[in-house]
Length: 139
Length: 343
Image (cartoon, rainbow over all chains, first blue to last red):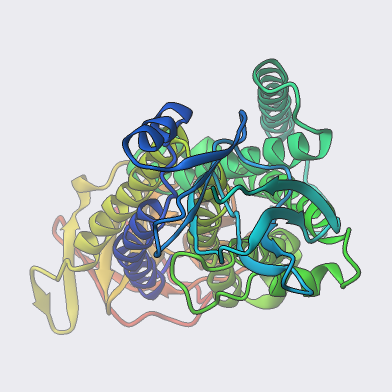
């Protein structure tokens, strides 16, 4: 390499050494509570008045009718094969299902749903198939 | 060094090196697939291929990026540098298999064009933490493709060493894209402390070695002449240069190499015409200065590659007063013959 190329090489690595770690830290901070386990979820339920709508090795779905900020919690305990599972609220009053979010990775998701919602549907938009339909009980 | 362009200039060294690459790749894939089947038997064949080749490409990219600074810091690593391009092309092929299977698995089942879907399935381009990771992987693959496609000496010669080197320095950008592709993609879906640690340590090691080598080179570049007499710069005494070897000096902000051979002294540019290798770190073999990187050769008295080769580098005038060597900092046109200083 000549002097100019050596200088360019040094500048590139100085920049990478500053920029890359900052971006990586942001992505690590953004991880969705990866260590949240089945037992943690149950612990939350016991401490607060939440009802378990579904409990299996992949999902824990909790409903808290009193919480006005986010009354539906979905704990995704292991990754789904579908790359983009969409979550819909199904209601008898609504002609179409309402999209409420996407499950992107293992972790905890909070959703706010209307009390007229009768079930929550998890839908694979790519394969266009329903993965799961969770009936809700508001009692 | 070859006169005609051939797909691959095979020799026993390269064959041995490539055999080790093939064995390493085979063992890695076998181990990865074996462990995955044992620990997660539900994994589909497509997912297994995507993960096995993706991790293989990342591992090879780390090795490729380590070879450069290690060779600068310790000449024992130079044999690895000699055939690095084959490792680079292998890495690209692994990344291509990963990319192709990912596009097939994630984007060809819908009714939109797979590449359109790649860019539009996640539109959070304004988000730092939810940025579409597949797009980063795609652009990294494009850079790696350009590098693999132009890795042959035909392109080095026709693009010019300057453009070629600039293009191949893009590998550092590709590396940053690959890291973000993994951290924003695979690690968000399956967070793993093990994977985060391995990649972070990998980055720290690679960045530290590159910076260490760069700072060491900067220190050499800052050297100035100790003594100047009538425009001639004193460089060293005759005894300081070993036989059939050179000492490197800075004149006019560029490096030159002064070689001692057959009781003579000659000065040439330190930069090889091939890939910019440091000629002054090479040896005089069969009367020719031989680049330590890929074996390109030049006659020390005129800076020309021996016929039938046509490469030429700049030469410099020398003079000897008693035991002291002086160089005239103005380089002569590439390939200009100068009578060597007799000792």
